[in-house]
Image 1: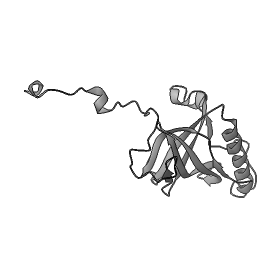
Image 2 (image 1 turned 180 degrees about the horizontal axis):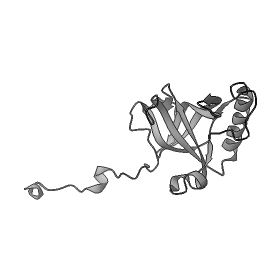
Image 3 (image 1 turned 180 degrees about the vertical axis):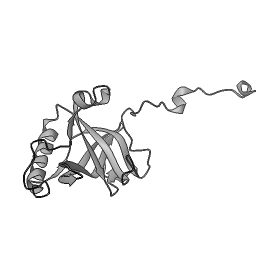
Image 4 (image 1 turned 60 degrees about the vertical axis):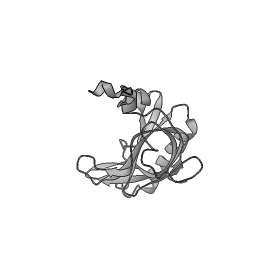
Amino acid sequence: MSTKVITGKGLASYVSVVNPKSVNGSEPKYSLSFIFPKSDKTTLDKINKAIETAKKEGVSKLGGKIPANLKTPIRDGDVDRPEDEAYADSYFINANSKVKPGVVDKDLQPILDATEFYSGCYCRVSVVFYAYNANGNKGIACGLQNIQKLEDGEPLGGKPKAEDDFTAVEDDFLS
């Protein structure tokens, strides 16, 4: 069994795949939250199997046995993000990497324009799951490998584009 998963179609959120971000002073990482519908049982099954494999492979890192309260990266959007409609009736995983992920379009062409992959577009991701034991916290983490953008979506984040807020003005308006 592998700890690597290639997901089905989902929504990208909290995207930081062009420039790494530091969270609370930690080492900067590339990351995203991958949201997929609860109806996608195939992706959920692949993730759960990969997590189980990561537990078995990482048992020595976890202190020789798998703790009952082991943290896993799969989250229920209805429970963990009830205020955010993008997460409704969905599961999500937060994936990150110290190494920049590859980002391609549906035709496998590299996406070089930083504005082309954003929170709100649809994608598939390649991720790996692995055990960690740091500062007394034990669990399974999700490493971001690569991303395939499938289609554009409604940008997330609530900030409207400038061209949506304004209309063109005549020169005499400015005087």
